Amino acid sequence: MIARNNGCKEVHLDSGSNPGRYDAHRLYLKSGYNITSFHFALKLDK
Image (tube, rainbow, N blue to C red; front, side, top):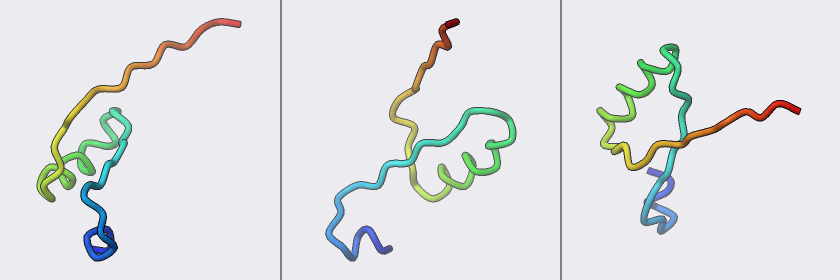
């Protein structure tokens, strides 16, 4: 892995949460990634 070969201790990845991303999420989990947090957003009207 490029990150490991360059001395990185961790790799972080952000991914959308819509159903179109579910296959990607399965791939990340299968590859050893863990879900470590949730990101919340609130759109404000102008």
